Length: 409
Image (cartoon, rainbow, N blue to C red; front, side):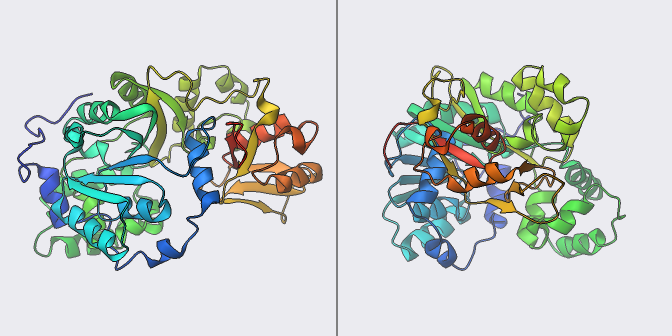
């Protein structure tokens, strides 16, 4: 992958354009508190779902070593609050982000959180390895994303995973149009420029590609978030092929998409088209690339990856003779809707976390009954005859995760 000339990250902090930008415009906007997070569902069930999304075959112990790479103002503190059994380390180059995180750590007595002002490229200096490295919304701002990703791979413990989110280009077309517009006009984050930009955005043509994001994204309701979206001095986006190539170049193996249904030809409206079978005949990577083009509105890609030498972590194969012993677990955002249904359907199953409205799984009355019996303790075999193929549909549709560890929870 190419990098911006002259933008190499400096170990003497204060010299990098991105560091200076986020010191002036902390992101995400620092909240007053995390009381809602502290009072939320951080229990074992939610932790178990999050664990088995990444590691279907690894027992959930409730403890791990986690690196939040580019933690911003809140991400590391949120993780430490929600998963008190984890040992969490947050790093960020922004002194503002680190300071906000430390305040939250003090307020909530987060003894399981350590925070360092450190560039992602320098994480080896921590002298630690991690079971899970989380880097979301950060790598695409680095001068050399490949160097950053290689550094993260270098601190993975055996069997460790990387959860990586980067921008996707097609859904952000409007963002990049307006970034170019702002550069041409010399719009900055100083003076009255932000207020003038907000006023100008109100007059965008209704059909402008940015229009949908303006209506739907919270990032356009706050000055620092607006600056991050439209005035960021360095950001790039990755198509599916570019992202998969980046993983390979960094020595990582693609595991799965964190939400995989938008990339699969048997999920959503694409499955009803004459092209569904043609797409399904392609290799997996080509299927994902085709679905990105078909959808055209994906804003980001979130992938779970493993060291290239780790050939087993994260793998799921429903032809495995042991599959009937796996325990499906419904994700918290999965719901059954039982009104306004097509003939023959007893319910529409959907994941509220999906932004794509076509990702609906219609089920019969018998299938709905099976869905409701999924409680995280029953195995696929205990769900009854034909449950394996049904659970596979649910898995591909992001409605369940799988505990294939054989452990008794």
